Length: 612
Image (cartoon, rainbow, N blue to C red):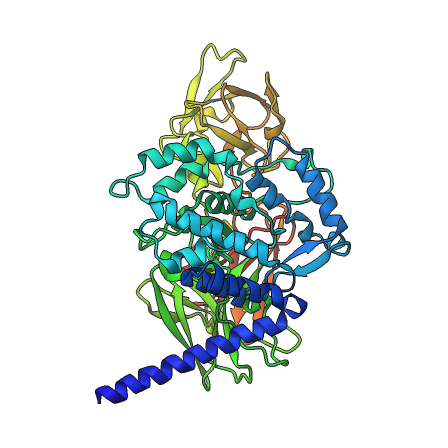
């Protein structure tokens, strides 16, 4: 039995070795005229340097080189020359800037696509491998970093699609801090992640359009910041990668961040993921990762054909596997789970169908998913109703019951974000005064914000004894008091004529809920005395996702397999909307047809809205 086991291990090892040789040979064959350069690198570490680990590193880089590229030509050289004139910028920032033209089709038309596997020289690759090994073998904080971590997150000579050069050797910007770090670094008390934080004081809000006129429309965001920080980490010798979520599951947008790879930390941390839910977290890698196999017919979304996206969701979230049964036949091999983000369903995970079932691995919880497939023309089709994946791992299908209806009273179309609390917290303690005299020499306190107000319009009922007062004053009680709109309403629910006295901040006069002021002094109004004040409508700084009179809204519910079904349009007359005869227990979506883009799907549970 032991001999058989040894033989099986030997056969398996030989098979794996043959498979690896076959892959390496296929890459070398694809390299065309550059094959000699790549073979020279392998031969260098086999016969000249005689370092077997460096040879393995060279093989790793070469085998995973297909798909990596950069843009060259005269247009890129001109762009690099412009960047080089920006003497105030460090090398790691300039490397990020090099990639900007690739985002503009008109710029790419004047550039040349250069594949690494067909362009990189032996001298360049050897120097990059040697440079990375010097870091690994000499930096004290890398003493416990294993080869696989080094290979995947420090060895690679590129971050994304920047022009290859010797940026790793440009440590000048960090020289002083780097030297100080070596002096106090103690692996028993300092983690590599703590050491990396020293270098996080980089510019996150680049306003380079003021000095670079060519690409004024380029938006510097979390991707730009993550790339800059990754260049910095690789320069000083800290294994790192860019992790990202392709879309949040409870709000619009996505997020990218640089993540140091520290073996002492088993669970990664990201502030944005603590505030929001998501279905998947991926990592940008140099190495190839499994992707759906393209058969020439079935459409596969570009995101899932990118081999450099690695699923790292379990490092950040509590996950579970989900098995889905298709409720409509599908001939496609691959099924996807989509989340609702930026007003559409976006696929974030894929699984291979087995009959009418498919299993999705390591899915984020407390998320609404829609199982979908893609037709050959790229159109999306639902294959089962949307469902909630709860924190306990159970799933709940969201199939609206058209035989049972309910009533919905809606005040918002988007979930409240964490900053909303900061926008209203400073109002506590502030109050309204009223008087018959413009100098308020006698006055009454008509209302006090004893607690934090709501994020939407706060409807302050005016007592009968104060309704005929002519002068009104808002008195702030903190330096964090934000107001966006003030409306005085009469008994007939119409807006009363009023005149703002003294300082007249336009933000309170334009009726725009997104303009606001920081109230650092008393605000005073004179009200037309012929009308009694019934209510004061007070709007703090907000996201303008409430219900606003005059705007037109439309409510939808999801019906499988048709999709979104309209329940009719309404033009708001008040700060709430009332919908009757709504199919119960469904998934809903309220749209503002007049303005705005922030909208979330929601469920209606025990008389309250629950956004997803």
